[in-house]
Amino acid sequence: MILVRHGESEFNVHYSVTRVDPGIEDPKLTDVGRRQADAAAADLLAIGGIERIISSPYWRTLHTAEIIAGHLGLPVTIDPLVRERTYFACDIGSPRSQLKERWPDFDFGELEERWWPDPCETEAELAQRCSTFGAAQREDDTWRGLLVVSHWGFIRGLTGEAVSNCEMLRFNPQNGEIGKNLP
Image 1 (spheres, rainbow, N blue to C red):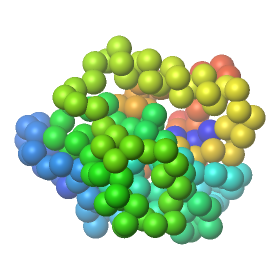
Image 2: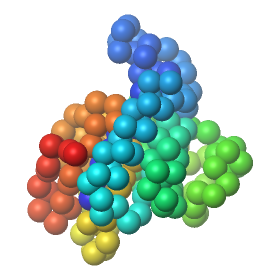
Image 3: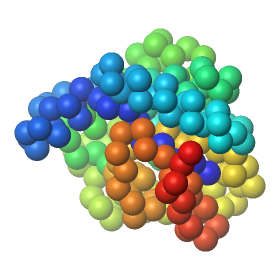
Image 4: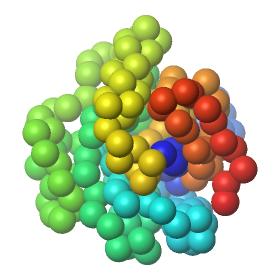
């Protein structure tokens, strides 16, 4: 599977300079973030082999997934298991009904109206969620053609690797092998 972190968000712009939570809930992508998603889509087209896309339910990942899916011609399925670790204001999500209104063609499945945890998620809880996702992928032969649009915390929790905005990693859930040189 390929894991990609969302494009630059409004939160990322402020936090990268100040290291202080700016209090932006469920931030949107910046113009830079949209360009990063376009570039990631071009790289993914060159790589090939993507057959399905799973995205976290946050606005920044949904918008990144929308851009990539538009280039690849694939549908997007939402999976809250791949969401960010709830810690900052940006990790307060938007209700399912608002997201579904903005992305009517995305498959939100059984996502609850209020799907993000409150107040914070511990590292142990993140590790358990990553383990649950990894175990599910090991049982599913389609992981090889899977693109997961996610977050810094989830990708770090799953792979041990910290990634930049729209950076991609190959990840083999069978053996934990990581490939960084994408495309």
